[in-house]
Image (cartoon, rainbow, N blue to C red):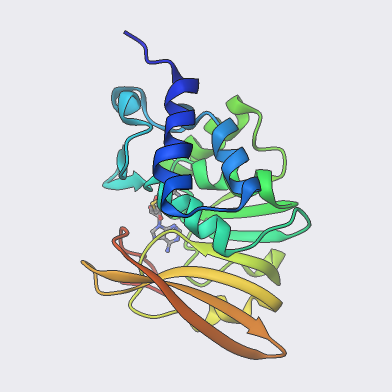
Length: 215
Ligand code: SAH
């Protein structure tokens, strides 16, 4: 039997997001509207709204809905921003960021996933302001810098300095930092050239590969 996706979506927003403290109404509304199942490969689609990450192939995952919501909320987007995402995966978070900001560039290191993200965004009509770039995003993406917000969807041993250099003044970034098994989600803010950061939750993301992560 095919699940009623709109029911699953509403339940996810209430139980996984609102009840756990996601307050940004734009984030809640967007996650209540975007068809998450369209971003999960067919064989795992029944798991699309589960309270955890789901496999998307190539050893990668679509992040837990709560994590995606929290990261988007911490970026405090209003609709005018240019956002960089590192680690498109299947493109779900990029679709969300696209609904919350003006422009999104998302970089994905696995070429097949970059292609899948592009196809998912095109099919759902959510890719109009999202550019998917295949390549190593651990050192950012210079051509569209500076960014008002940067979201890193894979864990690094430390915050790559090059990423910070691409963050504009008053910009915000979210990135999981720690060991391969255990990280904390850091929220970074640039203010008058200074970098401030605070820690939100413990988390576990797939490792960031390439020059700014674990090679
Ligand atoms: N944003 C996704 C989560 C994807 S998981 C979502 O919507 O839920 C993290 C992704 O980061 C994986 O697809 C992985 O291939 C990718 N990745 C890892 N290192 C990378 C790098 N250096 N540059 C770009 N993408 C990277």
